[in-house]
Image (cartoon, rainbow, N blue to C red):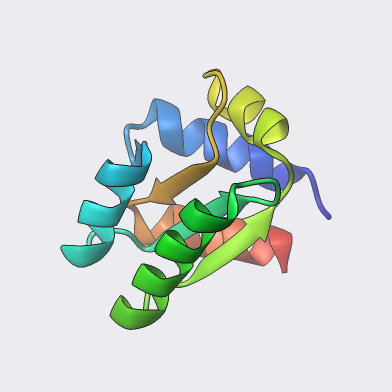
Length: 99
């Protein structure tokens, strides 16, 4: 997997175009504000199901990425299992770097 997407996540976070925390991400998905949801591969099964089901229902693209440690380091935060990208431009760039 191309690690350049981690830099884009960091940029999006510094530009305040991300939301963190499961409840905040779920609200952003419901409000159609989330353009892309990135979920760590080692997320717990209940959290993974809740996030992926919500994304599927509201037709928000989501990707399973590296482990929570890698995701947290990209954001400069500790123990983050998911991040929602709120900007369409960042979302498209991240998807192109991963895909």
